[in-house]
Length: 111
Image (tube, rainbow, N blue to C red):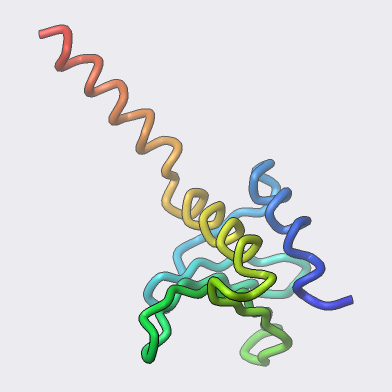
């Protein structure tokens, strides 16, 4: 089995709150730990074309294991984008941020 085959499971576990993500050490990256493996999801721009892309990599300690990446022409692009977006939402607690914004908007609209 390859890492790209786990993308739907990773997305589901993240969406259900069973896989927790945290800001990564690189810009535009988020990481999760699962069974002693660190998953790293990141967003990047191709230097030549300016096209966006996503990568999901796995590490055991500092040892790189495997990665899957894709730009908008890749078959994995949509799944990688979904995993990255779900990881970003979880790591940055964006659901809570939106809720707080909504409450504040409700409050100021009553004034």
